[in-house]
Amino acid sequence: MAFDPRTDRLPFSDLDESKDTLAGAPEMSDDARIRHLQRVPLFSGFNEDELRRVAQLSRIAEIPAGTTVTQIGSPGDSFFIIIDGAVAVRTPIGQGSELRPGDFFGEMSLLDGEPRSATIVATTDLRLLIVDRSHFWRLLDEIPDLVRRMLTILSRRVRRLEQALHAIRYGLNPT
Image (cartoon, rainbow, N blue to C red):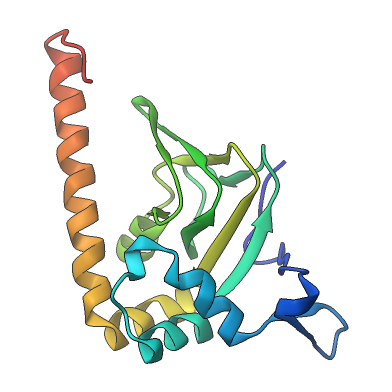
């Protein structure tokens, strides 16, 4: 099963956190979304106004376990932050690390315009915060601390990848 962030919009259905929309589907209130965002380490220390802006420029989706969220080589037009659940990462060099709440993925395609560099599969049911391309740059412009945090995490990922490649090249155990 594959997830298409452009068409698969599965909002939370908790009645105490939702309000009716014109289409009749429940939509999460900003306050409920902010409560979820406060649990995400990427946003720790953000003030309520910053969290509210993230909530306004994003949407939340529930994804069942086993769903392919992104596929290597496919175009990327969304950035994902895990609120609840876990995903497995598969890259061209093999299985990557598991990502958990607070981790994010999909940013590279939005940053460089290239196809997806990894396949991401839900290993559990997921709650994802999704920021589409049309809102991604606006969000980074409006919340500069988010850029700094993402760059730090990306740098750590590159270092881990370099260490893994070095270990593979020289026959060492990368762990």
